[in-house]
Length: 289
Image (cartoon, rainbow, N blue to C red; front, side):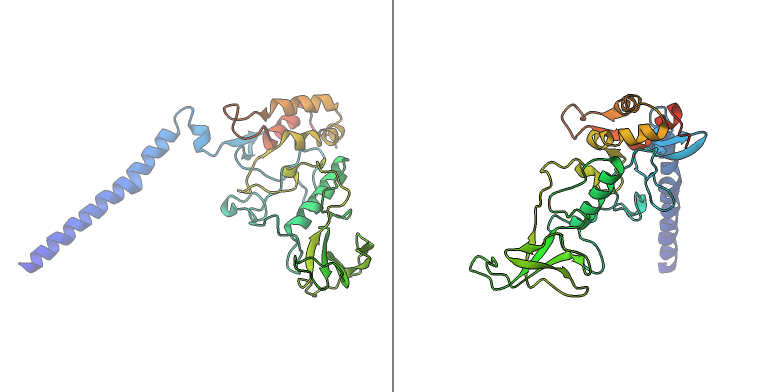
């Protein structure tokens, strides 16, 4: 009697397994797939893919780089914002860098967020022909940060420094400042730890409102953002127009056509879809270079 009950229980369990496998593993996925192919849903379900000349070139939802094999920006294309997702815009590694505004000192293993921002701003400024300077950045594109070493007062300030080091400028670099509070500024000796000093970022003489916008030098939280701000697009117009041999007004018109406003008129910020913009430029004004 016990044996037959055991068999019946396991046969019932096997039947339940087969039925649920068929429903959840075959019927349900096929039903979802069928619904997703309905008009109005198919494009989104397939990943909002974009085609050019019968070739899939990307997704309207995921950004991508417009660079050559060496990573240099292609002059005929609008450039996307930086990405911290894997090697860049990797959907399987979507993530932010998790670096914050207090990450201002470079280490031997990586550059600080401040130096990354400074370097990107200088690169964009040089490429677009605008002022790439930013507060707390040196003219060479690294974080303008000093380690001020000496006895501290009750408030933690070093009123009489005995040594001042530009921690993000490794020797034999010439420091961005000659002196700080009467003490000569030294370059940083590789491998030395200067955390004993008070870390002081120097604002410098850069304008409060940089010409290079924030989205040109910082990555999005997902690392997949396909959009840039109208401000970043605006400083790229002259370069793209020159490369394609058309007027800036013609390129600006295409930018305006691919600029979306705030959702529901109040959510988010205006944005430009870089891939769709570049595809439209290729269609209207092919690059002859």
